[in-house]
Image (tube, rainbow, N blue to C red; front, side, top):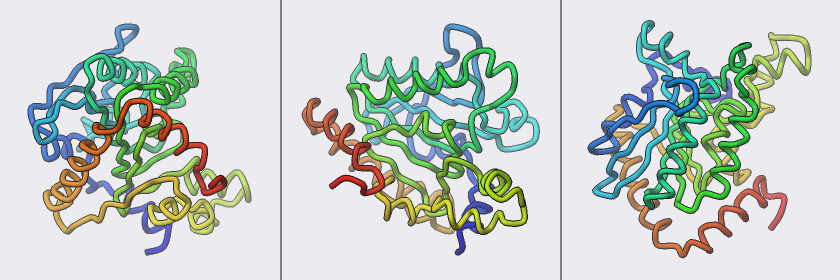
Length: 259
């Protein structure tokens, strides 16, 4: 598949959302609401659950499954209060020693006037700062689109994985073509140049693993869950100072620039 085909697959209206992944990956999920400052952003689905018996915190971006829910979820584009809700859950996870698992599928953070007025950039920055210093394991999984800072805000993790038809990029191919060439017809070329596919990002050491997608969601989730159980177990076994230093080193050598 070409890069643009991966983009279209990641955006498909039939692609599973976080609300479909969560019950297949976790047990006893209890959703927690609000940022305790402004509102409850439904684009961020967060709560506590069990992964094969291990208590975990789950923070996911939810696009919605039909027209009504997509509008309610703002098509997966979170407001500042969504990222502040996520931060609240990250800190609670640290307090109670729960690993954090994030599921990411967004075209990007919402860029409307209200979001900017309420500090969208600051909320994303605070999320990045919180995750960078969080004293508990963090695993991020990109299940669909991984767009710009809206995705990165939940992806500063000890391990970052992608489903094979997910994409992860600083900008959309359409946006890239419009900015660089002022020509939307070059979207396919932009998609190739951005190196946004899972295989590209694995080669550049931006992610650690690509999860194969099966013909059914249940089969894909079975593969993903087994991998998550093993990875969380391994991360929990690391001494805290080693976990933190490895996280720092991971981002220092991103892209293979440093040894």
